[in-house]
Length: 65
Image: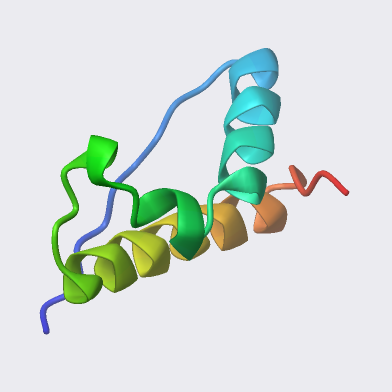
């Protein structure tokens, strides 16, 4: 699968907020029907993307506990 680079320019406050959000998102919440992720594969792909963003935020110093 081809990798995509997604540059992201955020204020400090927004980076902290996004870090808090991705910390709380998981397969259980991503698999809920209100997000229109209808298959387990879609939920897994979404979770992988959230984890990648969470890791990038942590590398930039935004890793909430």
